[in-house]
Length: 111
Image (cartoon, rainbow, N blue to C red; front, side, top):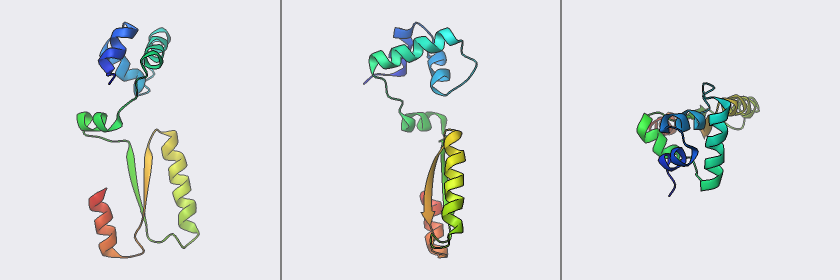
């Protein structure tokens, strides 16, 4: 399995630079960004969001619990949340509580 260290070695940059590029930070010089992308392609590196979440103790996930999918307002709301979240690099998990308190509690616990 290819690691971020392998990408850094092949690109000739620091691990921090690779991390900044993969996380979309604008502070990386274009030349270094291109080196990192080339190394990622060459090595077939795949970013592991689970490993990143374990290290940083954060995720780029949003849990959206709606009371009912039947009301046409909520699917439109969910679509708007998803569109904006995706632009910001987040993933939305949609849960339908059916207006049941226990179901909502379970979703909150799972999320």
